[in-house]
Image (cartoon, rainbow, N blue to C red; front, top):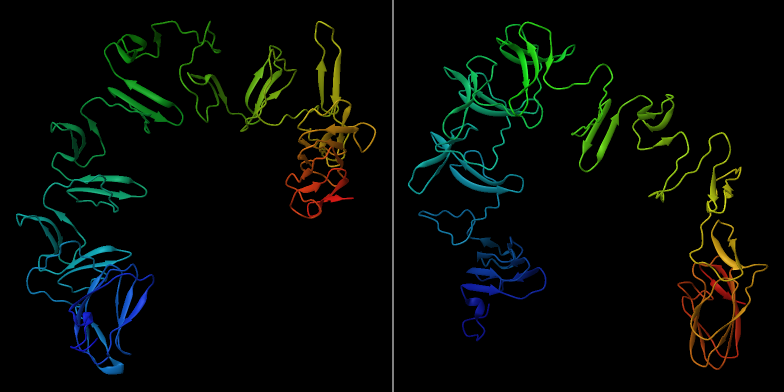
Length: 524
């Protein structure tokens, strides 16, 4: 800080604004004998640490403003953050936000705090409530009674979702709870009903009469999924749906004409059990004797996992057969009771016992396996046009001691060439009878194959490219004539251990042999 006669006396100001700066910095307030208060705004993007001596420092985070006091104690000078533990006698107004940075504590009369785990913390201590939230009319909205973890809401409670996390208890007047085993729990206690669910017109929809486990539904009961009864019905039930492990679904009723009546959507009787009898009357035609026989059987619903033997239909999948057996899920047999088609249990495989004849192309979206069991090796037969006869060409797998993979070439080759292998099952086309192909004359750009012997007869620059993905021993020969320079394209491989193209002047010749990925094509 300059003295009073200096012309650059900014540091004598009460308010300092620091700008610029490309990194966190330490700012020394000198001389260390000055005792003063500053309001300091850090307008940089980094933390600025202020110091005067070996005593305590004050850090001002980026974008913050603090009041700092120096004690001017020389080499041991201390800086103070003077607004620490600020006590305000009146109201405290903030134009933007208050951001507490520390936890509250037990015994705080009225405190706001923050931790990274708990977020904002409101702590209080009163004779009636520890925390009270009031509205603008000084009316109580929410209270936390003193010394409890309860929350009392004075008005209506509206929420997107109310997530209860504890059980209710006997004696609760009106409680919502949750346990992992029971899920949502509604518990109540009234003189007529323990629980009553009403609609918007204040009319009862569901009732649980006081002290019972019965449920009374005032209107129709509609289930989007299934209605599952878990207990038996009893003689005298007016209309009951039940279940036992032995009898399965049970319908029991008691009417003057019928005990049970099943109707269709037109309110017409479909199935009747006359009162007091075991007779079943079908109003329409039913062709069930033991086997199910019909001119046409038309299912109209989907099958499901676990169905032991089901026929279904959906608009997307058409006819659906679903089964569940120890060997096969589905088996289709002929009239001699012999298996024709099998789907082994739990798989998506299809086993055909006989010959498969297709009137059009068979398309496989994966690999094709041709087997012949213990009869012999797998084979593929290509038949001539049926107009010509019934002769065929048969390709048979060998009695191999190991797996063999043959990869076909990506081109059709040239006239007179034959398929050859590189010894690893990769096939390519090459001239029959030797390592070298016949000499060929090229006047424009060309990509060679192994064994090519090329004469480049061009007056201008021409590029001849070595074979792609070459194997050890692949060779090419090039002779340049006609006056033009030939560029030998490396095709992403090295030439003479260099990742660069070669150059061949007119009148010169070279033979290249592929050695390995490091050397690439080596000039002989």
